[in-house]
Image (cartoon, rainbow, N blue to C red; front, side, top):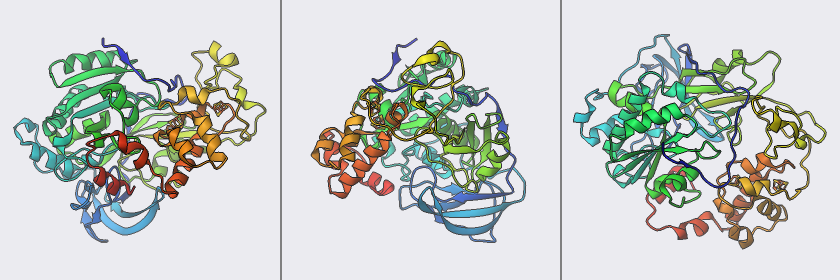
Amino acid sequence: MPSVRTFKGGYRFVNFEGQPKDVLEEALIPQRVTIPLRQGFGGEGNCVVSPGEKVCAGQIIGSNDHGVSSPVHATINGVVEEVRRINYFKRDCLMVSIKGDGTSDYQKVQGATPHWEHLEPIELERILYLSGVTALDREGIPTQMRSSVILPEDACAIIVHGVGSEPYNISQNILLQGKNTLRLIEGIRILHKIMPNAKVYLALNSQRKKTLEELLKLSAQYDWLEAYALEPKYPQGYDEMLVPTLLKQKFPYGYSAANIGAVIVNLQAVLQAYEAVVEGKPLIERTIALCGPAFKEPVHIKARIGTALKDLVSLRIKEGMIPRFVLNGILTGPELKDLTLPIDKAYSQIIAIPENHRREFLSFLQFGPQSDSYSHTFLAKFYPTTKKTCETNKHGEERACISCNYCEEVCPVAIIPHLLSKYVQRNIIDETVMNLRIFNCIECGLCSYVCPSKIPLAKHIKDGQERLTIQGCDRNQCILPYFSNLKGIEEYRGAKKL
Ligand code: SF4
Ligand code: SF4
């Protein structure tokens, strides 16, 4: 067993109420889907269908061969009802609505074959691109078709991660059930064939001993593939933490791992790459974990992209509960306020936690065995097996900083959140905060979570970054001088509109 790798700072979230069971339900084929033409990594696709047109699942309905992007597909068989722009995660986005005919079959990606080993890398890249899988993960999967900010030959490392360090995670038992462990290795071999200069780092949760042992054995067959055990401490799953932990390299904060030649993909993305190349399956569905104490029964669900959120969650909420829905990460994910909006390629968890604005006297002292507290106060530590409630409500006003230093202890990038917050609140927005490395903040939200005074430190730091940028001092001046040979910076700025 390899030694367990980790980083300084961070926090272990353990034993939270509302973890999804190892159950995978198949959602019904929706009667109607609404498909955003910008989803996952990359720019918006141009719509290539019109209202009234018949489409089949797996047919490309949006693509843009001139910008960094990947095609988007119809996810059900039916007729295009409407093409319109709507506000989607604070951005104007073109949406295609399709009324379905109830059938579940789909059109396969041309050229896909179980004998993929005979294909040239460019053919594999074309299949991955046409399947839409290249839009997955934070910076996409590189191909010659401009699906990421770098080209495949520029990749020197591929990190495949299944660490699961968030309070709620998609279950590895679900992702790697049946023959999926073997499919994962085959998916990794496909990615390595298109990025032959890259060493592959398989980063696994050190607590999942059985999976770890199995994958260690399988990876030993390839000299370009190594498996590592990582402590599932938040935010280990962030690209900014994976790069220093595994590659022992600095991360260009505010930019992307791809800019230093590292391609980071999660287990689900690799499995979907396998399905695209071997089975010809386009990216038309996602496995999503429904997590959190507000669900009657937290489970995993496989649903077609474009399904309305309300169709997945509304009948699953506990009676009388008013939940707050959050996408992907309870500490940092956007709140899902409009349940008529659809799910897209980037969804992996929908978290439902009880909304609670009740004021509580001295709630920061965290009495009770169910409270998760960084300070380990009172009863909580005597009940290690009691399920904790994931609590992000404030229960009262923000209080003064008590200089406990917790925020500094947990910060994974070793900056001083309480100091930065104080400077920003006192309008000291100059080189003082730049010298305190304000632009190194990766917005993990951990400082705000552990703060007993409920000070929104991460928000203050983000405000400070924005105000510095308005004044003309941006992260380029603080970050880029420490790096030479960053790749795809212009493409990254273009795709992210920096
Ligand atoms: S300062 Fe930034 S990186 Fe550090 S804990 Fe807070 S949000 Fe995370
Ligand atoms: S955790 Fe909160 S109270 Fe403690 S030092 Fe940081 S800002 Fe101050």
